[in-house]
Image (cartoon, rainbow, N blue to C red):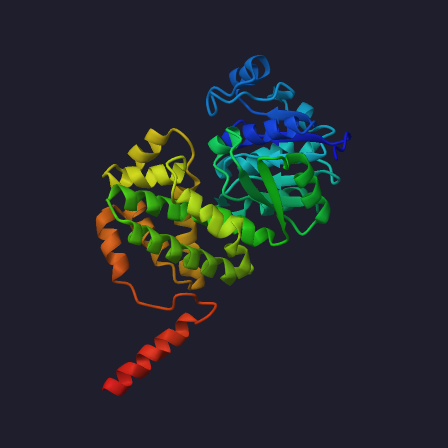
Length: 355
């Protein structure tokens, strides 16, 4: 049922923000979209197209774009923040004068801020002090959402009002919105999977087979859930859309920006060449550095993240990294069934008997 009082504001002129804005307009809500670029504002208002990110996508004419934060935010009920992680906090601070405590604030950005190792919804909370805060994450390639292909996502929040408002605004016959109360786990899953998409792209470029890709994705899921649970997330979250679902799509599709960066690295390009060729933000590059540092600080075993760090920032060839990964310790398959320490003890006991 449409709540005629609800106005949706979308901050960001990228592909996913544009697709979400159009979905909300399709659902009958007043939608305002903010972006800095005046030319992009004009294109959306005049031609109902986003020529930079979704040139072939017909945006609902009810979406009105503006570069004025005050106009976009004043009176908005739901605010979707679709800003790349590096600019996220800055935009939220600019928006703060026009945000109110009764608004629902939702991040759609899959990234981590370096200072304080903060996720985007934590920034929303810290900068505003508001209670209606959530995160939208899942296997959501923007191009496919724009093509109205069947897609599912997760709205995660401890606040029931946040979950229900997002489901009302965005749920439709091709975009299914599921709910979760593990905001931290859902958001961390969305950020971490970008790391492994780079590894999957590298593996594809190196000609590795289906066995290798299957192993890579499964060990990636183990690694990301190990890290997240060590930081307080629910391990069951990683069996859902925001965990294994998002990991599969981003490790399998050339539509994934992080996958394409990894593919370029596997073809022998430098990191700068790979990122420049992409022409868009690949959140996984920065995430590798941040997660590797935090894992070392917290003592969490993350060989894939460590190997990717060596390729991206230490100049180790991608093929050499793959060999090094196979030389790492053989441990437990699912640590929440058989802990890694138990496997180590088994190995020590076997060695002692052999001696």
